[in-house]
Image 1 (cartoon, rainbow, N blue to C red):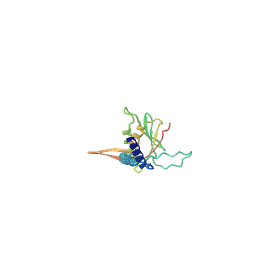
Image 2: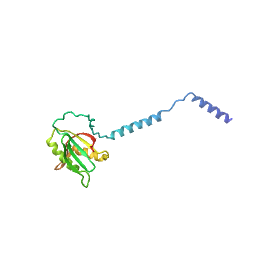
Image 3: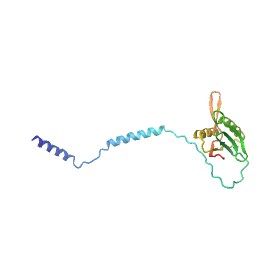
Image 4: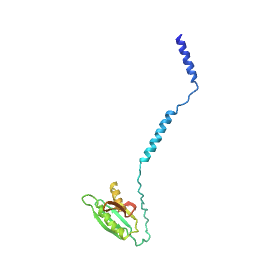
Length: 170
């Protein structure tokens, strides 16, 4: 007899929930709230540095007449760095030393050029095809700015901040 009572109790309980096929979304909302907070807090701590570059336009067959101003090019070869004017040719050559490229000497020479052409802001950097990315960044930093040390502090000065990249001539 007790078996009949338990069967009727089960039918009654199942009948109470018949037709209620609702999905419980509370756990899903809990997970979504946690994800939103996680995404907000991780987005705040990510920082991206952007350096704007002006890539050189493709040269046409005939060049227009160029003005009598400096068109600065820094050509990086495997064994040397050449600072040149596109119109007149090489201005200075800096062979590699035991530590690699002599970028402090290049920066010192570019500081002299900046004194003669204070309004000049652009430079073209020309690299050989297999130049390491770290070398490209170091040369860009050397051409864009210099470190000025005064007693008690170090400041950065601007040289040629508008940098264009290209392939070195063979």
